[in-house]
Amino acid sequence: MTEAVIIGVGLHPFGRFPGKPALDMGADAVRLALADAGVNWPQIQGGYIGSYEVANPDAIVGRLGLTGVPLRGVFNGCATAGTAVALAARAIETGEHDLTIAIGLDKHPRGAFAADPSVAGIPSWYGQTGLFLTTHFFGMKINRYMHEHGISHETLARVASKNFRNAAGNEKAWRRTPLTPEEVLASPVLNYPLRQFMYCGPNEGAAAIVMCRADQAHKYTSTPVRVRATSLRSRRLGAFEVQSPSFPVGEPVDSPSVDASRDAYERAGIGPEDVDVAQLQDTDAGSEIIHMAENGLCKDGEQERLIAEGATEIGGRLPVNTDGGLLGNGEPIGASGLRQIHEIVLQLRGAAGTRQIPGTPRVGYTHLYGAPGASAVTILST
Image (cartoon, rainbow, N blue to C red; front, side, top):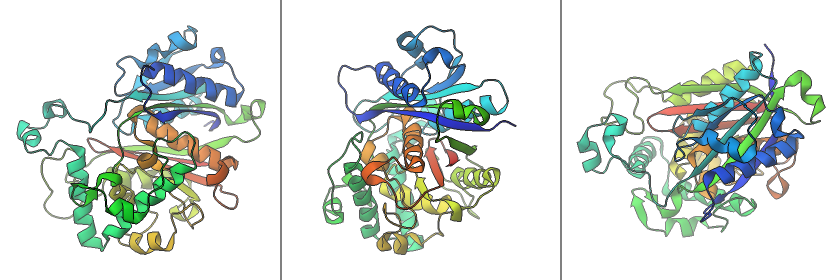
């Protein structure tokens, strides 16, 4: 099977851009990715584009050129970008195309995501009791995890502080004001134990990546990044996930993040110990902590010590969310996972500027998780 490699990345800044449509942001990101790859839009043979708010994201071809390219729309909750990347890579691996693109874009209104629970197949009482708000779910989930594994409020604050500090060095991030752990802890409680500055916020942005066959990469770049593995998993019976209207009884069931992670490591032929830098879904500070263990990067409960020691800092043993993650960048759903890929590619190229991790990183890891319990993992390497 032919291997897919990334030859170009493009990122529109994340934040708020009044008057600028999501499709225009997406077109800007595509142009940046094409320029980075050294290719033109007519050369793209196929692609996948994801968005939550835009009903027909494939209409972006009107901004880029009507070349007849098959550009397929995808949506998989917060795992949308992971799906777009996987499908664009698979089209190369199977020989369908030689040059593909993955695009993500979104423009969310202010405030938490909310809707009629019936759209997710959930009874109306679930919304009437406030449980359809994801902020409530994540608060309950980390509260239980803290109790079971000895995670402190200070560790939650350290995670948030780290991500805002990393975002300060990222010119395309949304929240670039550093906050100390003490300032994070002083912010209002939204859903106990999570405070205002421990949550990410829906916002606006776009990203794109260009891929080609590995044996043709020399035509475009001297620093191709290999797509070693992609994996997507949905929830299993008995797992407690976003929008679960009940808590499982009996033996715990692994989350889709655990399943996707194990599958990706096996496909890539590596283990967690080989990962040099990671981007984990940090919908809130507690999620980053839980996902460290679910992705095999530590054991449950080890996060307290590792974070206190600075292991997840840019200069630490396993840097996590070096660009500020969702806390620093916000989450335009369709683009969020491609932002992760963008950051890992920069890190593997040694081109991340002031947030570049030390040494010569060779393996990067990205992870997405969202409603109603879907997770996507992508492993990249030099």
